[in-house]
Length: 143
Image (cartoon, rainbow, N blue to C red; front, top):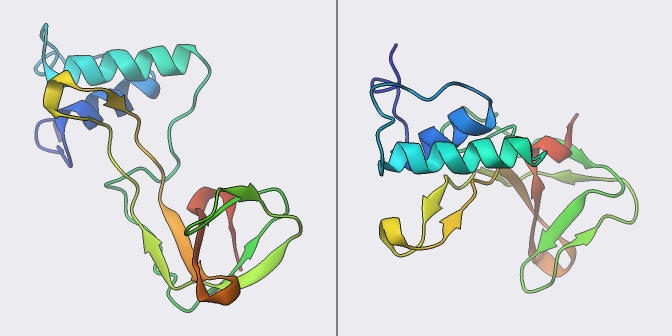
């Protein structure tokens, strides 16, 4: 399957993922000024800077976790709606309510805006006081 056949989200995202994974640019998509080329250049620069690709980027199949108990290890960054993210002070188990797909790489305000890196998928659950709480899927332990 060619990259043109497997396009999942956007050429910017596809280029970024190829670049951060260290793949050579696709000859059919990589031309000066293309969305693919710009994404690839950002991905390649991030790889050289030591950043890694999201483990569960947007477009990958995700496990069905609704109702499944997962462990949040101590030290994992946890986001609660309306509060700043913080590290879990201890390990604890929660019942997952949903798995949210990650966000693809894109530009704000079209192709001329600021570049936004892709995020990985996250697991959500009802936290203290019923507030929605989440952590990255790659950081939780599936029991």
